[in-house]
Image 1 (tube, rainbow over the protein chains, first blue to last red):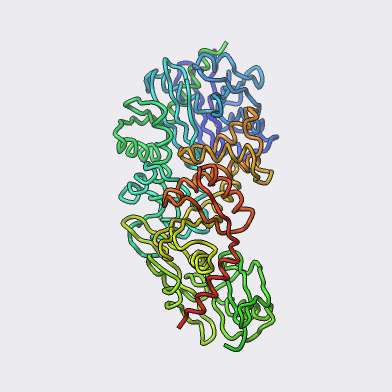
Image 2 (image 1 turned 45 degrees about the vertical axis):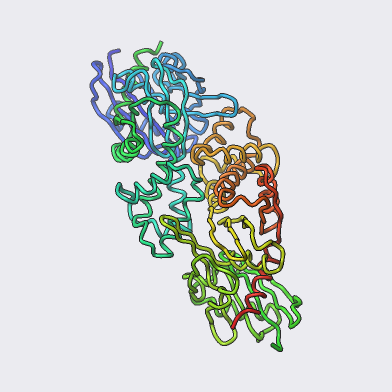
Amino acid sequence: LSGPSLFADWGTTARRAWLVGRNGETLRSIEDDRGMTALGPEDWSAAFEQLKQGLGSPEPERSLLAGMVGSRQGWRETPYLRCPVGIDRLAAALVRIDAEAAIVPGVSFVAGDTADVMRGEETQVLGAVAAGLAPPDCLACLPGTHTKWVVVRGGLIVTFRTVMTGELFAAIGALATLAPLLGEPASEGADFTAGLDRGLAGDPLTAELFAVRAHALLGTGRIGNGAAYLSGLLIGADLRAGLGLADDAIVEVIGRSDLAGLYRSAIERMGRAARTIDGASAALAGLKRIAELAP
Amino acid sequence: LSGPSLFADWGTTARRAWLVGRNGETLRSIEDDRGMTALGPEDWSAAFEQLKQGLGSPEPERSLLAGMVGSRQGWRETPYLRCPVGIDRLAAALVRIDAEAAIVPGVSFVAGDTADVMRGEETQVLGAVAAGLAPPDCLACLPGTHTKWVVVRGGLIVTFRTVMTGELFAAIGALATLAPLLGEPASEGADFTAGLDRGLAGDPLTAELFAVRAHALLGTGRIGNGAAYLSGLLIGADLRAGLGLADDAIVEVIGRSDLAGLYRSAIERMGRAARTIDGASAALAGLKRIAELAP
């Protein structure tokens, strides 16, 4: 390759993109809100041109895109590769947009009544492993709108589970019953921990939520920051679903630093260790490695 | 009393009202959507006048109102009576609007970190008991936006728990991730049962929801009616929270017949019996009995 490469993690609500030189150095990067939900079916090509312009490289040598850009509502639908999946299989199954650009496939897990899918997280997780940020046998947690818990064995994604923590947090925070009580931002502290312990305890979420309102109406003073309590409750439930997938002593938390911090302290409360890995670094590492392996 | 009495169950989104003659016979009844959310703080008095006109009785001998009409956002705030509470205490603690009209207080439960409140359901549950529709020792389930599970011992409400099943069902059904998959109405059948079993099994709701989408994306055919599955999932979680409150062999399900039917079949699946009681009849029985007992 003589020219630079364009790599993008193009998701539901945001996209991150990097222009990378021949020696792997990042020449320029962009992060913006031109994710899938901001784009109609006809907008992708123009949004990609605008991305290349923004990176100062109208004609990169090659482009590799991962995430919801490959979904049915994305630019070009890519298949789901069924677990177990290593990074070499991702590279071998790229779906080409044209001679220059391609999209990374997603990953699925199906067993009996269980079914799950991911797009984008496979690139982050296997990228973290490829770059030595996470070991080839690990339990990874990618917190967010749809938290993913991913079990990696011998460098292969063998199983994973999606927990709709962030999407439910937003929806619950907008409920008529609770919205007036959730004014402050969620933060660590006693209310977060109290919610966390309730979430970990295993009673249904629907049965725990009303307590936020009842405590406020009765003026018990037990819940000060309702948003922190709710955040703890949902993260507790998230951990209850995720930590059961594998008993690795260390959990690799891949994501934004603020959210990764909340998850790390929650995981530590459960008696496991947690290591945080920057989500953007993991995505870029994955895209680079896939590009190297691509036929 | 020489003239008729007006009784109303005036809730969050709906109100039901009855004009009752001296011998207890219902002369006229109304059910409409002029609940609390349809009314501003200044609208209650006019809405009450309009209700009396609608019942053909501009000047009833007395009026007794139960439900959210007594909340902070209602017409006149009434206190919460702390459990245990029998129907005589409700009657002794009425809050008067004027010489003619009064509102039934709510009920609270506080113990350690647990707090809960109800307004309206106390009248239905204790009304059902007063009318002999339910025994004085029972576990009652009032399904709805906020399902209430109520333990009655010796004719007293001793503890209860709120589960936000209906409110979450609506909020989850509106999520961008799931809404397109929930077009059909929820109904009994294989998908309801599959969701019910998952909800009863105890994994977090946030971890179960994404399966609806994953099965659809992968075309597994395992979930046909997503709304029925979601309904089963939430009702399963509801039962998991409520049935643990007391081990009564028969559960008294008080409410609308469609919802009561879904709950009855779910409860029977858990090896308990269920009896359904019409919610309106229970409310009217409670209001009548409170009026008899009122000082």
